[in-house]
Each structure stands twice: as structure tokens, then as C-alpha cells.
Image (cartoon, rainbow, N blue to C red; front, side, top):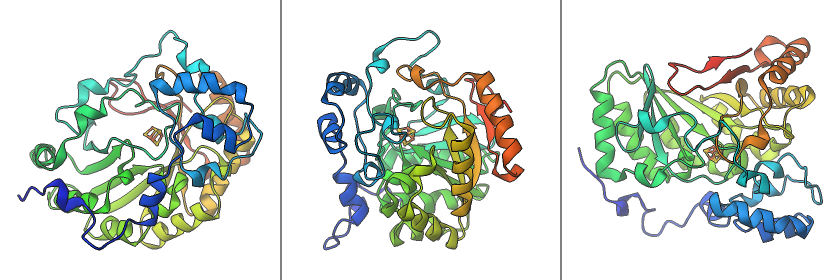
Length: 341
Ligand code: SF4
């Protein structure tokens, strides 16, 4: 096995940064800038600054352009604007709600479920979602580098029960294509690995990420490939997102969506139905609707289970079955996600 150095993952000399990389370098990271751009009440600033100390604000401009000006309750804004509520402790909420620290046998690899492993391909995200269950994850300890990736690859190669490799993060599409191509080539060379699954929010928040270089490594191997996108609200699905999803679909990639049920964002049956229909219009099947993971700082997004079940009843009454996502909860130590309704 050849271990490449970091330098070989850089763009070749003479090749300029891609459009998406320029957008990634130009994220909005300052609560002041976001509040000013959206013409929000500056009185929100002190709380936003305080909460962003713990978990920084990061949001692509392409996503902010879909937000309504002057509306502090905009469902896209609510997912990214730090609020004072995040600083209040809540019983039952912790830094590692899914017990991932106990399922991390090698840096960069999480083995929770039979037959599949997660590779933490990138610790970064283009967007910091305030409800993220990994908002306290020790990414600095899970940044294996080229040489240490071999430990994770050896672990997969030594366990013939592992038939699926899942790229996760952070957001795996935050990583450079050369790194992803390098890793995918080695994953695909393990004979018992049949499927590659990529979980990413980038096709939604930074759709220019789906360019030719990305499609090359996503399709340039013998693995069945699924991309699980993460969209929570129908207003996230604009024309640019539709174009990115169309490219993925035409490349033969199976597209699924997972969403998180979030108070004040998508806790209405009409919103969830519009999300399912908007996804399907763009070739994506609604897959999971997650109940909120109890991560410290996110309790204000919680929708109680009984209310979630009632929402699912409404959805089933108005949508065909294939447009109704499965409502699930992830429980630390359980061998699979727990179906709720
Ligand atoms: S994109 Fe995913 S991993 Fe990144 S902050 Fe949002 S929910 Fe968390």
C-alpha cells in the first residue's frame, strides 16, 4: 500500500480551486454578518455570539440566499443561528448522546451496526446545524491522516461481515476529491465490500459541490453507491439543488433523504408532506425522519414522541406510502435504529 502525503491530495499545480471550494472558503462565520445580511434585530446578537463560542456559526451564502429577510423564525435560519437556549442545561441531554466514543476502535472509524462501518472522512461541515448530534464530537482525535487510514482499511478487510462502508463526518463531501478518490479506490479493492453510502448535506447547502470531479470518484468503482442527503424543509430545495440532484441521479446514484424532526422548523404535517413531494420531484426518496438526538445545546428543538406519532398519522393520510419516511430514534448501544411509527 502506498501512503500518500498530504501534498499529493492538493490540487495539481496549475489547477485552480473549484467553484465549490471557493464557496467553502467564503462561508458566513460571523453572527454579526448573518444578522445584518438578513436585516434581523441586532438585539439577537449577544446571545448568538455567546452560543457560537461553544459551536461556531458556519453557513454557506448559497443557503442564506434562500432565507427570508427580516424573519427571525425563518425555518432555514433557525437551523443555523446560535441562540441563548443552547447554553441552558437540560436533563437527559449529553455531549455524546449516541455513545459513539465506545464504538470507535480506530481513529476515523465507527463500528456500531452489524455489516457496516462509518468512516469519519472529514471533521468539517460547510454548515453547522445547531441540532447536530456530533456538535461535541472529538473530531481532532478522529482525523487519521493518510498513514492511519490504513488501520481503518485493515480493520474492514479483516472482517468479512462488513459489506457496506459509509462515509460520514462532519460532512464527507467537505474533503477534497483527490482524497475521496484515493480512499474509495482502496475501499472498493476489499472484496467483501459491496456498497458505498455517502451521507452529506452539501448537495443541499452548497450544490455546486456536485461537479465532474465529484461524480468521477462517486461512480468510478464497482460499488453500488447511495447518497443520503439531509434536507429538513421544502424551502431548502431550490433550482440549484434540483440541478445537483439531477446530475447525481443521471449518474446512477441512488438518492435517499434523512431529516430530523425539529420544533419550529418542520413540525407541521403540511411542511413534512411538502418536503416529501419536493424530494420526490427531484428524484429522492424520503428515507428516515429522526427524532432529535438528546445532544447538549439542542433541547429547544425537541418534538415529543407522541406528537411525532400524530404527525406521522397525518402524513400517512395524505401521502402514498413511498413518500412517508420512517420515523426512528437512535438509541446508544442498540443494534439498529429504533422504528417509532
Ligand atoms: S451537516 Fe450533518 S454533521 Fe454537519 S453539522 Fe449539520 S447535521 Fe451535523
